Image (tube, rainbow, N blue to C red; front, side):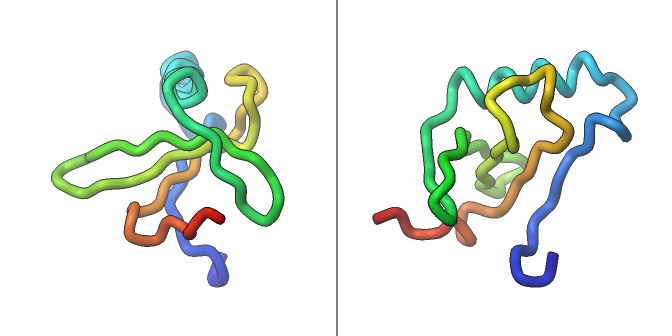
Amino acid sequence: MAQNPHCYFSRKKSKKPEMYERVVGFVIENGYTQHYSGHPYTVLDVELNGTKWFLWGMTDDPKQSAVLNLKPVSMKPEQP
């Protein structure tokens, strides 16, 4: 998405879908609400290999989640 560059993890391409679901559940349980384009998302800040990222899924139900998105914290939109 050129207008919204980011990385993502797909359940469909995951070698361990049960682990994918656990990670999404962890983000939901330990994250906080951020609003983007008027929609609430549960976001979690993490540090991987010395880089700070924020993760968010497209649902609040790990069993229904198909994609887990991530971006560097430097690209996080300002909240009102």
